[in-house]
Amino acid sequence: MRKFFIFLITMFVIMPAHALSVVNDTEVEKLLHKLITPVAVAADIPENRLKIHIVNDDSFNAFVTGGEDVFVYTGLLTRIKNPNALQAVVAHELGHMVGGHIAQMSARMDAEMKRAMVIQALGIGLVVAGGNPSLGAGVLAGAGGIAKQSMLSFSRDEERIADELAVDLMVRANINPEGLIIVFEQMRDLIGAAESKMNKNNTNHPLTNERLKNTREKIKNIKHSGKYKTYSDSEYELARAKLIGYLYQERRILDKYPYRDSSDAAVYARTIGNMRGGALDSALVGIKTLIKHNPDNPYYYELLGDIEYQLGHYDDSVNAYEKALEFDNNAPQIQTALALVLAERDKPGDKERGVELCKTSLLISPAPLTYWVLAKLYDDGREFWALAEFYNMNNDIKKAKKFAKKAQQKLNKDTPEYIKSGDILEK
Image (cartoon, rainbow, N blue to C red):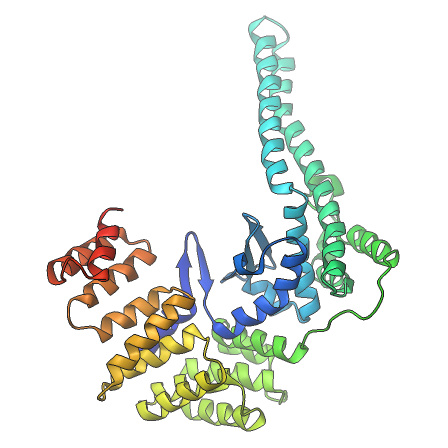
């Protein structure tokens, strides 16, 4: 049971997406949507097209691609302690999009490559023409350096513009732009000592002190009537604690949340750490304490369901997950977890309920684990289709086709699963 659950946690929390490893968690994803959506709408991204991805990487980073996909690193989430500051980071990244910097950077890189090639051709020409060989070598060596310095200067200018646009976007979204100052102050604390030894012309960002000064001046000149909208620090802190509990080792969790810290966030992180470490009795005490503090939090019941499942208490686990869904019926990870326990418990009606939950989860947020659980619930040939979808989402096309072929051998040709298996075989 213990080894089986660790395998599931690995699949449930962190799933591969392209070259990145992403975290799937309803609680954290919903919080990020709440925080990021106003900034995205201010950047003219329709709310229904915004996609947020949590990247499992300890870097202090975020980026935007395609104008609609926002990638936020766990290293940023676990370090940024203020929801307003997180909004500021995303506003900066969206500022690059609004400013057209991604396309401009691509065009500039193309232009600089061509420029470097001309300079290199000139260097070769000097050598071939019988000129001073050392002069030709010098031109060749300098070509890459000229292009590099030009690109660094261009990048620094873009970062300055993105900082200004971030302030504009936050004000437009009725969010306090002071969050950007919090970010730069935290960055200064993290890398200020290293930056003091840097040549400012050899970096692709302006130095943090410059960015801090520019942002303060920009905010000082803003005219804004009324009050900025505020966001819950406690809700954000709980989401951070959850990530830390799942992603950090025990010693690191206790460094962040020592036992003298009795806040709900600290108990949450330590409870998750205890569950992961096999200290299930301690985890049970922790989660029951949290539920006593806030009996309406669906994600506490989700964690209770996880712990009860590990203890082998299937009925209690089912009850906990069902309670979680009473408070949040739009929670794909909780639906999938409940479906898994129902598949394991296998009482009359459990498999039918589990299939219904998986189908609902897939409509909200398709995930490999949901197909894997669906394969445990089916026993009529559709389990092969579900496994084909599981491997397909994990980019293991060879296994996906193997199970798609098995599915078609078992299923009637007019069934949706037969047709979907055919789509996989045609890839």
